[in-house]
Image (cartoon, rainbow, N blue to C red):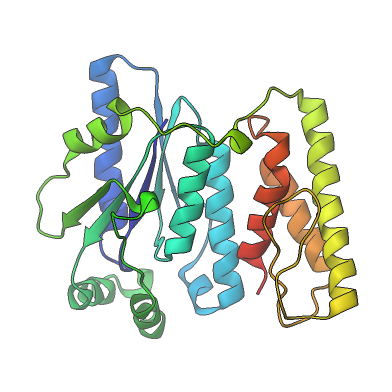
Length: 281
């Protein structure tokens, strides 16, 4: 079922709107007698603190956690509301690709709030808000969604003084609409749980071993690396990445995904590389 991605300035009301939307969807599901579930995934649920956004490495980990949680949860019977900052267009594209891969609709909802008003709301939240310097930095880096981009479309903008969310339009866009067909390379194939875990371990191990060898040969920095099992290249940070760090990231990824047997084994490498790219700097 659909992926609904929220985006907007920090403290612009995304979580409140996400809860409103979840309530609307649950009522609509009951009316239509559908067997669907609705999940909100956000920093609070993932135990990500606002301090994570003052450090680039920690912020990448936070994005990686959200991406993995969405990928684990999204299914034909589960509607996922990604209630995060999602301020980077490349990250919204990654979320779109997850939905496209399993053949489910997707939309983006932007909370339309002037930055000064969002700043005021942030200050009113006291200790629960963002530190002022973090808030200003996130606002300055915000990349507005553009509905001309397929990953930002359909786009719904909720103006801050709108009393209600356009639930009917959102329902029509993501429940009644047929999803775009998944790319042939991302169509899931049946796989036993035993083989899946084996392939998961094997693919991730091959990738981190290749990463270590290539960085040893060519040094830190420079062009992204080609690794086995993936058409996506791994970034080469301007520092030596230790094997222990790679093993830790691999362990996290395997733990997140070992029960997700709906993920096509042919995509494991690409998904793991995306996870690495979200956590390495």
